Image (cartoon, rainbow, N blue to C red; front, side, top):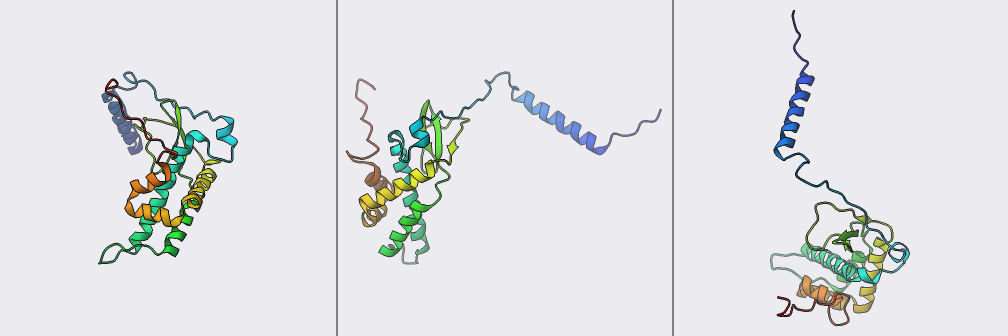
Length: 196
């Protein structure tokens, strides 16, 4: 009896299948790890429908706005970089840059749960150790709320004061907008000796 060789695609598929099974066996398959699961954060009515940023998200929102202002101003300054060093932006330029930073899309920001606490997440925000899997809710009211928060800071502090803080560094800008006794991000109390 004469047998025909297996078609090339079948041999390739069989080889690929064996490689995948081998890799699965080496890592232990699913037997030694719990399955990964993730659920979307459950938003209350204020978080879903309010036109304003809910109070428990205001510190994260402030930090996001400070980051975006810093990023936009730094990018504009980099365009003016000369062989003599970094030059300051003119008042009209930094005013325009700050207004544009408030009107950008904010689509990269959303809400997720971190250790059973709902937090804003996106560029410039670190919410502690990253979980291996999570669900982020983006869009909806969040971009508008962040834009309004940004415009609020422009009105409260003014472009001149914000740009002066930016020139002192990203931390100074965040401290201006978010810190201080009346700020949105109260400093955590230092640990006492009894807690250590």
